[in-house]
Length: 257
Ligand SMILES: [Zn+2]
Image 1: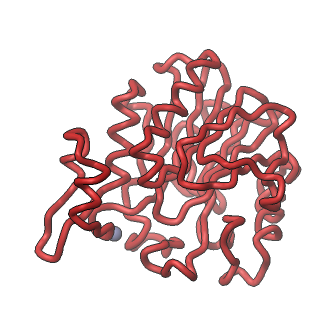
Image 2: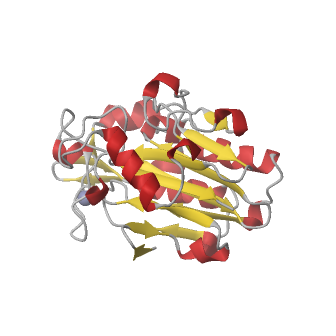
C-alpha cells in the first residue's frame, strides 16, 4: 500500500488502468453519513461531493450502504447505483457490497473497524467490506468472497487490500467478549493478555480469514499499522476520538470506462 494523491492505494491498483480505489485520509473529512462532520468545516455530503470530484466521477455513481454491523452483502446492480451516495434516506442496510458492473464506485466507511476492498483481475468483479467485530464473527469476509465467486470469480484471481484498522495495541476487550463471541480456537492467537487486561487484534483476524478463504498471500495488501495509534497518520478513530465525536474515513473501489 502506498500514498498516491490524497489516498492510500493498494499495490495491485495498476493491474487495471480503469481501476479507481483506495482509502481516504482524515484530510478528506468525515465520509460516514451516520456521523457528524467536525473537523473539515464542511457537511458530510459536501465531503462526499468533493471526493467524487477528486476521483473525477459523477457522485451518482457511488453506492454506499447504511452500515449496521451486520453480515449483509449487497449485490449492486445498475438500479442500485447512486443509493446512499449523499444521504441515508435511499441507502440500503448492509456492510459489504459486490458488483460486476462498470462505472459504480462501492464505498464503505470506517474508524477502527476493518475496511477491505477486493478486486477480481480476470472478471472485473469488485467488493468492499466494513468488517466490525460483529460482521467479522458472522463471516462477512467469507460471505463477500463467496458472492464474488457466485458471480464467476476464481479465488486465485482475487486481490484484497486491508486498510488501517485497530490492533492489539489499542483494542482492549473484556474476558466475556472473547468467551461469548470468539471462543472458537480460530481466534485464539488474536487475543493477547497484558497486565491491564485482554487485547484483540481484529485486523489480524480479517487477514487470516482472507487467507483461509483461499486468497493468495501475495495478492493481499495489508496496511498493518494501527488505526488508533499510528504515528504515520492521525486517523479518525472511534477509540481515540470517543463514541460521540469520531468521524469516518472511506474505502472505495470501482472500474470506470
Ligand atoms: Zn494502536
